[in-house]
Length: 206
Image (tube, rainbow, N blue to C red; front, top):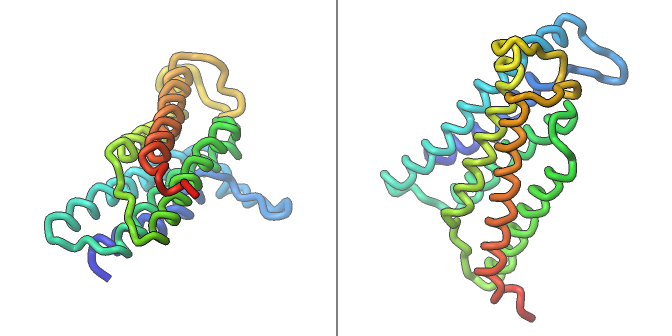
């Protein structure tokens, strides 16, 4: 396995580590008090740092693969899979925390299933649907939105508003920016999905 593929694999491995620092532990009623207190107070900052590191590997593996001609079919699969698992897993955690609406996440997941299904149909015909720039833009807007939401507790504390939980944020400048960024990511998700389906409509005939 070459270096770019190892970086993609590392991004997948970092997914459960990121979520671990986002959500307090509650296993059939068992809640480690000390750990959960740390998570509630500082866990999101740790999760944000891990998420940023994971996101940077997305840029690094692509640059290395292109520079040293290490592009492989496995690499294309792992890179795409790692991006989807990383972003969607963190968004699921935010739904659990009450920060984002489940229906918005459903839209994002439906887009990923639709595009992946289209690629499977194309692959069955020995054709490859290359990644499009608008798809990369979609991923970037999602990652920016997620990173901002992760830093919201810190921003609220710095601004003097205070933070007692995502479910009781209220309406303020900090949360409005977060809502706008996440809304943009959802819009870009829909646009990029429609773009893939329109460009690949020939694979859907018959």
